[in-house]
Length: 178
Figure 1 (cartoon, rainbow, N blue to C red):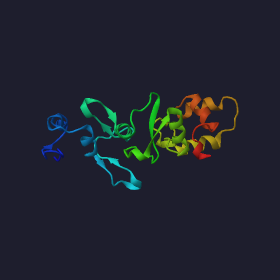
Figure 2 (cartoon, rainbow, N blue to C red):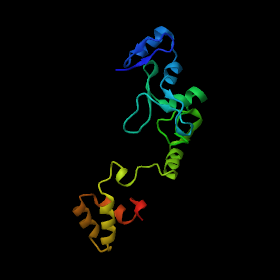
Figure 3 (cartoon, one colour):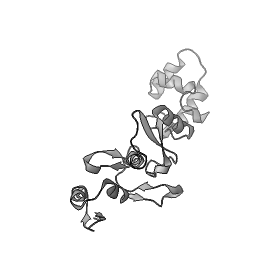
Figure 4 (cartoon, helix red, strand yellow):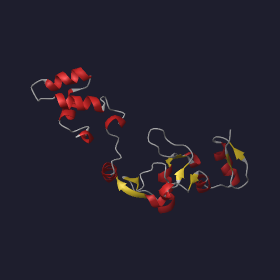
């Protein structure tokens, strides 16, 4: 099993023990951070090579036993504290990128609007909440006539809530299939 080496003394580590050693050897959080960054990523991205959160693809960094998203730590390291209520968004749309030049501050609403504008939202079958697939949605829309009770009937047939079915037939959801 390979690990990482201390950039000051060269000692090899596997797992979390480098954190304890870093204090003894005088390593800073920045020393540890940049040891886990590949600055040769596509499009100028600096790719985080250590722990990645599987549900969102963001890097995870834990200097001095405090948890950070790696991109947030990188932003703060270069630009200073993140104001309350602000998020760190990516220009490059690469969650593992920690290049501070690719990061910018945005409110949650601005971040979500940027995400939607760039079509980064999980939609259709790629959304893990999806109960239907594209074929079913196309079939439902093809069969839908608008007569009374039809939404309830379709909801029962496909095993979803009436609200879900109403959103499908009104093109609120699955809009990419229009």
